[in-house]
Image (cartoon, rainbow, N blue to C red; front, side, top):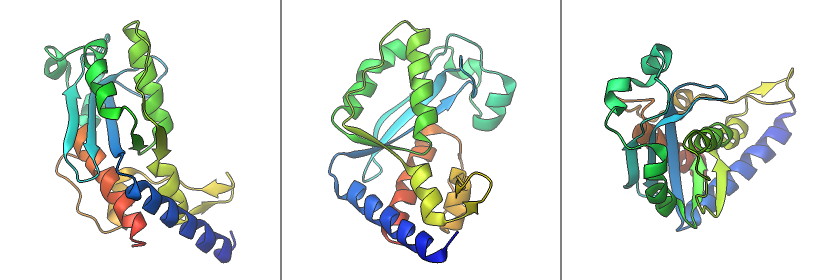
Length: 195
């Protein structure tokens, strides 16, 4: 990877992060799930605004049990979601929090896929009304600049690693939706500042 190319790519990500932050319609979304597969579902969703205020935060009762491996990551168990609303029950409020917004997600493709799978599991359409989705993970990979010759692209960094690399304080509850949405907000701010 040519260093001049990376500097140019990095400047582009700083510019894009600044554009995102300049919007008064930006929000940050994160989910926690039953797993990574094609039939897994969301068990927690959080949305925070540009100032870090919580716009939406809920546990979600999936149609399937939460495997111990997933609980080991985020700490959410079947008992925690037993009385939580189902995805179809929270969908109107979630859509209200996202309607017309620029939604920033750390690993957009994954979270949007899991939201679609959760809607499908409950037999509802996923219509969130967002104006645009932006992947902070893909942007941060370019910003950070670790090149992978094999894949011919910048290497994605886990959210916790991005926080450490930017010297940002990690929350006590990393891998909970509200904390991760807030971390995403802080990473985008740091990128915009060119840290």
